[in-house]
Image 1 (cartoon, rainbow, N blue to C red):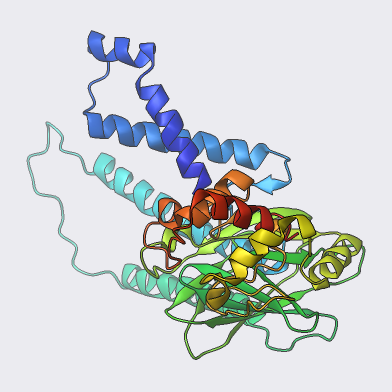
Image 2 (tube, rainbow, N blue to C red):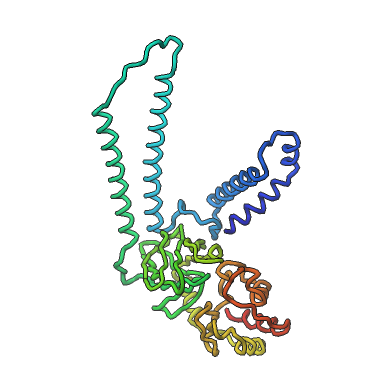
Length: 374
């Protein structure tokens, strides 16, 4: 989504550039407004994708299934390359035969007689029956092997177990063996130097059907109410990898984003230790803590050490350790956090969190309190 937002901004500036205006005035650009918009958007997104592929930064701004960093994603890419290679071969073969027939049997000025009529050919009949069957068989076996690898149900003892619950419209992330609960940001250890640290995800839904998708780490798996699906990933590269819900699940489906942060093992252990700590208690924000505990916040959110034990919204015990708020709707900055509390609908129209309707003083104090939850 970030890539599309950048594309739209650049598309608008490009369409208003002096060069584009001169081309339209001179008649060299004969596209309609809609066509110009489409062409500009496609071209800009292609350039953005190429730039993202070439970038070496820690955040992969555009999810890219062709740049896998985990065995399941590598298997999906290999299968997609096989399918595309076979499809390309069929296209080239059919196109070549078509052009040959057009050239070979083109009308000639000296043609006076109808060519010989041939009815039926056993060789052709057998070839266009056997070849498609072999192609389908190869694709079936390759797909079955990949699916079997992706749906491995035997969880190794060294695996990290994570339970992910899809909500409208955010992700609840639990580490049952570690006693950690967070939201929208999946933290994983990297596997390298022969030390395997695979992660197995148990996917559940609290309301409707969602779909968990981190293209560079694994495949796309549905998250279905009253059912637990299993997927796994084993990243071999550190960094931040973006994904989102891939199944339409309501008004804010497009902003049900997620981030996977892959750490070095020691760094991951440090993150776990920090998440296990109770919520910070800072005397200077006692007024804000009182506002939090006396409003409807406690009915939906949990903060360890307080009377807030709600389960409808994300756990806020370590809110400020996260990069975004609203499941990726906005960066987690003091200004955005205050605006989110004041009017969540401004960031995500249709979001289930109500506006708290606090006066400016209480809003400032509540924001100051939440900023201490690191």
